[in-house]
Amino acid sequence: MNEPSAGLPAALGKPATRALDAAGYRTVTDLHGVSEQQLLALHAIGPRAIEILREHGAELAP
Picture 1 (cartoon, rainbow, N blue to C red):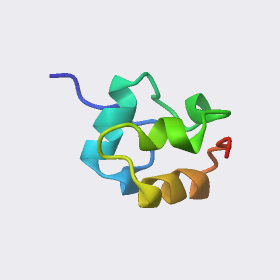
Picture 2 (tube, helix red, strand yellow; picture 1 turned 180 degrees about the vertical axis):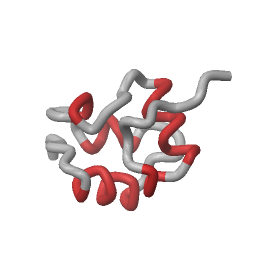
Picture 3 (spheres, rainbow, N blue to C red; picture 1 turned 90 degrees about the horizontal axis):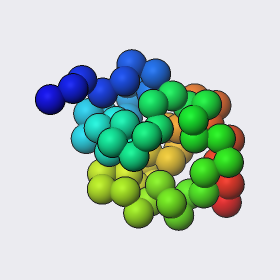
Picture 4 (cartoon, rainbow, N blue to C red; picture 1 turned 45 degrees about the vertical axis):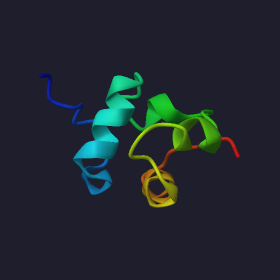
């Protein structure tokens, strides 16, 4: 299995990082403009993960 990208915040934890990586989001910049609802639909992504991503500069759509 491939290791998740190092371009996402380590604070997310491995399950959330793997879910984002599998969906094609490998850096915080990749998430710009993505809606919170799209991310919340991914396994292992919850409100805390959204908060962490925003704290690390992700410009998510509401």
